[in-house]
Image 1 (cartoon, protein in one colour):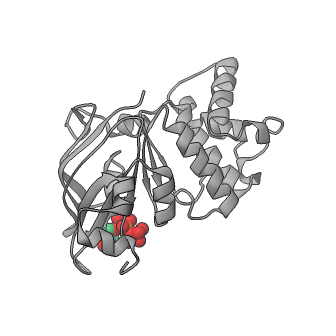
Image 2 (spheres, protein in one colour):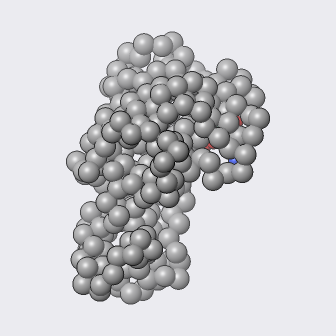
Length: 258
Ligand SMILES: Nc1ncnc2c1ncn2[C@@H]1O[C@H](COP(=O)(O)OP(=O)(O)OP(=O)(O)O)[C@@H](O)[C@H]1O
Protein backbone atom coordinates (compact mmCIF):
# COMPACT_ATOMS: atom_id res chain seq x y z
CA UNK A 1 0.00 0.00 0.00
CA UNK A 2 1.46 3.34 -1.03
CA UNK A 3 2.46 5.49 1.93
CA UNK A 4 3.36 9.10 2.47
CA UNK A 5 6.89 10.22 3.40
CA UNK A 6 7.65 13.32 5.47
CA UNK A 7 11.30 14.28 5.90
CA UNK A 8 11.74 16.69 8.81
CA UNK A 9 14.87 18.76 9.26
CA UNK A 10 17.27 16.00 8.28
CA UNK A 11 21.05 16.44 8.48
CA UNK A 12 23.21 13.69 7.03
CA UNK A 13 26.85 12.94 7.84
CA UNK A 14 29.65 10.68 6.59
CA UNK A 15 31.84 10.63 9.71
CA UNK A 16 32.69 14.30 10.34
CA UNK A 17 31.64 15.36 6.84
CA UNK A 18 28.30 17.16 6.86
CA UNK A 19 26.96 16.01 3.48
CA UNK A 20 23.37 17.32 3.58
CA UNK A 21 21.96 20.19 5.62
CA UNK A 22 18.44 20.63 6.98
CA UNK A 23 16.23 18.90 4.43
CA UNK A 24 12.46 19.08 4.95
CA UNK A 25 10.19 17.69 2.27
CA UNK A 26 7.05 15.62 1.75
CA UNK A 27 6.29 12.93 -0.79
CA UNK A 28 2.60 12.12 -1.24
CA UNK A 29 1.47 8.54 -1.91
CA UNK A 30 0.88 7.39 -5.51
CA UNK A 31 3.13 10.13 -6.75
CA UNK A 32 6.52 10.29 -8.45
CA UNK A 33 9.03 12.70 -6.93
CA UNK A 34 12.27 13.40 -8.80
CA UNK A 35 15.51 14.56 -7.12
CA UNK A 36 17.68 16.64 -9.43
CA UNK A 37 20.79 18.79 -8.95
CA UNK A 38 24.51 18.95 -9.70
CA UNK A 39 26.90 16.12 -8.87
CA UNK A 40 27.71 15.88 -5.16
CA UNK A 41 24.70 17.87 -3.92
CA UNK A 42 23.46 14.86 -1.95
CA UNK A 43 20.60 13.44 -4.02
CA UNK A 44 21.63 9.80 -3.54
CA UNK A 45 22.53 10.43 0.09
CA UNK A 46 19.06 11.81 0.84
CA UNK A 47 17.47 8.92 -1.08
CA UNK A 48 19.40 6.38 1.01
CA UNK A 49 18.23 7.98 4.25
CA UNK A 50 14.61 7.29 3.20
CA UNK A 51 15.06 3.54 3.82
CA UNK A 52 17.94 3.58 6.32
CA UNK A 53 20.47 2.38 3.75
CA UNK A 54 22.73 5.33 4.57
CA UNK A 55 23.68 4.01 7.98
CA UNK A 56 25.08 0.81 6.43
CA UNK A 57 28.21 2.86 5.61
CA UNK A 58 30.65 2.89 8.58
CA UNK A 59 30.57 6.24 10.42
CA UNK A 60 27.49 7.45 8.54
CA UNK A 61 24.63 8.95 10.54
CA UNK A 62 21.38 10.84 10.20
CA UNK A 63 19.80 13.52 12.41
CA UNK A 64 16.15 14.49 12.17
CA UNK A 65 13.06 12.48 11.34
CA UNK A 66 11.77 10.52 8.37
CA UNK A 67 8.10 9.68 8.82
CA UNK A 68 6.34 6.92 6.89
CA UNK A 69 2.61 7.61 7.24
CA UNK A 70 3.46 9.44 10.44
CA UNK A 71 5.79 6.78 11.97
CA UNK A 72 9.42 7.79 12.42
CA UNK A 73 11.54 5.12 10.69
CA UNK A 74 14.49 6.24 12.87
CA UNK A 75 12.68 5.56 16.15
CA UNK A 76 14.70 3.25 18.41
CA UNK A 77 11.96 0.62 18.36
CA UNK A 78 12.11 0.30 14.54
CA UNK A 79 14.05 -2.53 12.87
CA UNK A 80 16.04 -1.15 9.89
CA UNK A 81 15.76 -4.48 8.06
CA UNK A 82 11.97 -4.20 8.19
CA UNK A 83 12.20 -0.60 6.93
CA UNK A 84 14.23 -1.74 3.91
CA UNK A 85 11.61 -4.40 3.22
CA UNK A 86 8.76 -1.89 3.12
CA UNK A 87 10.78 0.76 1.29
CA UNK A 88 12.36 -0.99 -1.69
CA UNK A 89 15.28 0.26 -3.74
CA UNK A 90 16.41 -0.06 -7.35
CA UNK A 91 20.00 0.90 -8.12
CA UNK A 92 21.86 2.55 -10.97
CA UNK A 93 23.34 -0.69 -12.30
CA UNK A 94 20.98 -3.64 -12.56
CA UNK A 95 22.14 -6.05 -9.87
CA UNK A 96 20.32 -9.38 -10.24
CA UNK A 97 21.99 -12.43 -8.74
CA UNK A 98 23.56 -13.50 -12.06
CA UNK A 99 23.60 -17.28 -11.65
CA UNK A 100 20.25 -17.49 -9.86
CA UNK A 101 17.23 -18.23 -12.07
CA UNK A 102 14.94 -15.41 -13.19
CA UNK A 103 12.13 -16.71 -10.99
CA UNK A 104 14.34 -17.15 -7.94
CA UNK A 105 15.68 -13.64 -8.40
CA UNK A 106 12.15 -12.28 -8.12
CA UNK A 107 11.22 -14.25 -5.01
CA UNK A 108 14.62 -14.14 -3.26
CA UNK A 109 13.48 -11.53 -0.70
CA UNK A 110 10.25 -13.41 0.03
CA UNK A 111 12.07 -16.69 0.57
CA UNK A 112 14.43 -14.94 2.98
CA UNK A 113 11.37 -13.59 4.79
CA UNK A 114 10.04 -17.14 5.17
CA UNK A 115 7.40 -17.34 2.38
CA UNK A 116 7.08 -20.98 1.30
CA UNK A 117 5.18 -23.14 -1.19
CA UNK A 118 5.92 -23.54 -4.90
CA UNK A 119 2.48 -22.40 -6.06
CA UNK A 120 2.52 -19.31 -3.81
CA UNK A 121 6.00 -18.33 -4.96
CA UNK A 122 5.18 -19.03 -8.64
CA UNK A 123 2.08 -16.84 -8.43
CA UNK A 124 3.94 -14.00 -6.74
CA UNK A 125 6.77 -14.23 -9.30
CA UNK A 126 4.28 -14.03 -12.17
CA UNK A 127 2.45 -11.08 -10.64
CA UNK A 128 5.69 -9.18 -10.01
CA UNK A 129 7.08 -9.93 -13.49
CA UNK A 130 3.81 -8.78 -15.06
CA UNK A 131 3.93 -5.67 -12.87
CA UNK A 132 7.44 -4.95 -14.13
CA UNK A 133 6.37 -5.46 -17.78
CA UNK A 134 8.78 -8.37 -18.15
CA UNK A 135 6.51 -11.43 -18.04
CA UNK A 136 6.01 -11.85 -21.79
CA UNK A 137 9.74 -11.71 -22.44
CA UNK A 138 10.74 -14.26 -19.79
CA UNK A 139 7.76 -16.57 -19.20
CA UNK A 140 9.39 -19.38 -21.22
CA UNK A 141 12.76 -19.09 -19.50
CA UNK A 142 11.93 -18.58 -15.83
CA UNK A 143 14.50 -21.17 -14.76
CA UNK A 144 17.34 -19.64 -16.80
CA UNK A 145 19.91 -17.40 -15.05
CA UNK A 146 19.02 -13.74 -14.46
CA UNK A 147 22.46 -12.78 -15.78
CA UNK A 148 21.41 -13.93 -19.26
CA UNK A 149 18.98 -11.02 -19.72
CA UNK A 150 19.76 -7.72 -21.45
CA UNK A 151 20.60 -4.70 -19.28
CA UNK A 152 17.09 -3.26 -19.66
CA UNK A 153 15.51 -6.62 -18.87
CA UNK A 154 17.80 -7.03 -15.84
CA UNK A 155 16.69 -3.64 -14.55
CA UNK A 156 13.03 -4.64 -14.94
CA UNK A 157 13.91 -7.92 -13.16
CA UNK A 158 15.29 -5.84 -10.27
CA UNK A 159 12.07 -3.81 -10.24
CA UNK A 160 10.09 -7.09 -10.19
CA UNK A 161 12.24 -8.25 -7.25
CA UNK A 162 11.57 -4.95 -5.45
CA UNK A 163 7.77 -5.07 -5.96
CA UNK A 164 7.46 -8.82 -5.20
CA UNK A 165 7.59 -8.01 -1.48
CA UNK A 166 4.79 -5.43 -1.96
CA UNK A 167 6.67 -2.45 -0.56
CA UNK A 168 5.03 0.83 0.44
CA UNK A 169 7.59 2.94 -1.37
CA UNK A 170 10.01 2.42 -4.27
CA UNK A 171 13.27 4.36 -4.32
CA UNK A 172 15.15 4.50 -7.63
CA UNK A 173 18.71 5.78 -7.86
CA UNK A 174 19.35 6.73 -11.50
CA UNK A 175 17.64 3.53 -12.67
CA UNK A 176 18.18 4.27 -16.37
CA UNK A 177 21.73 5.63 -16.40
CA UNK A 178 23.22 2.31 -17.59
CA UNK A 179 20.48 1.67 -20.16
CA UNK A 180 19.96 2.40 -23.87
CA UNK A 181 17.17 4.82 -24.95
CA UNK A 182 14.62 2.07 -25.72
CA UNK A 183 15.12 0.37 -22.34
CA UNK A 184 15.01 3.80 -20.70
CA UNK A 185 11.60 4.48 -22.23
CA UNK A 186 10.39 1.05 -21.09
CA UNK A 187 11.40 1.88 -17.51
CA UNK A 188 9.85 5.35 -17.73
CA UNK A 189 6.54 3.85 -18.94
CA UNK A 190 6.74 1.34 -16.13
CA UNK A 191 7.25 4.11 -13.55
CA UNK A 192 4.05 5.72 -14.84
CA UNK A 193 2.16 2.46 -14.24
CA UNK A 194 3.78 1.67 -10.88
CA UNK A 195 2.76 5.02 -9.43
CA UNK A 196 -0.86 3.80 -9.36
CA UNK A 197 0.20 1.49 -6.51
CA UNK A 198 3.40 2.91 -5.06
CA UNK A 199 5.02 6.06 -3.79
CA UNK A 200 8.10 6.57 -5.97
CA UNK A 201 11.19 8.70 -5.49
CA UNK A 202 13.71 8.78 -8.33
CA UNK A 203 17.16 10.37 -8.54
CA UNK A 204 18.00 11.36 -12.08
CA UNK A 205 20.66 13.37 -13.89
CA UNK A 206 18.40 13.58 -16.88
CA UNK A 207 16.17 16.63 -16.60
CA UNK A 208 14.00 15.54 -19.53
CA UNK A 209 13.43 12.31 -17.64
CA UNK A 210 12.44 14.19 -14.48
CA UNK A 211 10.04 16.29 -16.57
CA UNK A 212 8.58 13.17 -18.23
CA UNK A 213 8.09 10.89 -15.24
CA UNK A 214 7.60 12.98 -12.13
CA UNK A 215 4.72 14.88 -10.53
CA UNK A 216 6.94 16.94 -8.25
CA UNK A 217 10.63 17.75 -8.45
CA UNK A 218 13.12 18.58 -5.71
CA UNK A 219 16.14 20.64 -6.77
CA UNK A 220 19.21 20.23 -4.55
CA UNK A 221 22.36 22.35 -4.71
CA UNK A 222 25.57 22.99 -2.83
CA UNK A 223 27.45 26.23 -2.24
CA UNK A 224 30.83 24.71 -3.12
CA UNK A 225 33.13 21.71 -2.75
CA UNK A 226 33.15 20.48 0.85
CA UNK A 227 29.92 22.34 1.62
CA UNK A 228 26.75 20.44 2.54
CA UNK A 229 24.03 19.95 -0.05
CA UNK A 230 20.69 21.68 0.51
CA UNK A 231 17.18 21.41 -0.84
CA UNK A 232 16.64 24.61 -2.81
CA UNK A 233 13.11 24.07 -4.05
CA UNK A 234 10.40 21.42 -4.17
CA UNK A 235 7.52 22.15 -6.47
CA UNK A 236 5.22 20.67 -9.07
CA UNK A 237 7.40 19.42 -11.91
CA UNK A 238 5.58 21.62 -14.39
CA UNK A 239 6.33 24.70 -12.31
CA UNK A 240 9.97 23.75 -11.71
CA UNK A 241 10.56 23.48 -15.45
CA UNK A 242 8.52 26.52 -16.50
CA UNK A 243 8.48 29.08 -13.71
CA UNK A 244 10.50 28.01 -10.64
CA UNK A 245 10.41 30.14 -7.50
CA UNK A 246 14.19 30.20 -7.03
CA UNK A 247 16.75 31.76 -9.37
CA UNK A 248 19.22 28.93 -8.67
CA UNK A 249 16.65 26.41 -9.92
CA UNK A 250 16.10 28.41 -13.08
CA UNK A 251 19.86 28.69 -13.68
CA UNK A 252 20.26 24.94 -13.28
CA UNK A 253 17.36 23.82 -15.44
CA UNK A 254 18.28 26.28 -18.16
CA UNK A 255 21.79 24.82 -18.22
CA UNK A 256 23.61 27.85 -16.82
CA UNK A 257 25.51 25.61 -14.35
CA UNK A 258 25.77 22.03 -13.13
N1 LIG B 1 30.39 6.60 1.16
C1 LIG B 1 30.72 7.90 1.26
N2 LIG B 1 31.67 8.30 2.13
C2 LIG B 1 32.01 9.61 2.27
N3 LIG B 1 31.43 10.61 1.57
C3 LIG B 1 30.48 10.27 0.67
C4 LIG B 1 30.08 8.90 0.48
N4 LIG B 1 29.11 8.88 -0.46
C5 LIG B 1 28.92 10.18 -0.85
N5 LIG B 1 29.75 11.00 -0.17
C6 LIG B 1 29.82 12.48 -0.29
O1 LIG B 1 28.57 13.03 0.04
C7 LIG B 1 28.25 14.12 -0.85
C8 LIG B 1 26.95 13.83 -1.54
O2 LIG B 1 27.12 12.69 -2.40
P1 LIG B 1 25.92 12.03 -3.21
O3 LIG B 1 26.45 10.82 -3.88
O4 LIG B 1 24.74 11.91 -2.35
O5 LIG B 1 25.63 13.18 -4.28
P2 LIG B 1 24.73 13.12 -5.59
O6 LIG B 1 24.03 14.41 -5.68
O7 LIG B 1 23.91 11.89 -5.60
O8 LIG B 1 25.89 13.02 -6.70
P3 LIG B 1 25.92 12.35 -8.14
O9 LIG B 1 24.89 13.10 -8.93
O10 LIG B 1 27.31 12.63 -8.61
O11 LIG B 1 25.62 10.90 -7.97
C9 LIG B 1 29.45 14.23 -1.80
O12 LIG B 1 30.32 15.22 -1.31
C10 LIG B 1 30.08 12.86 -1.73
O13 LIG B 1 31.46 12.92 -2.02
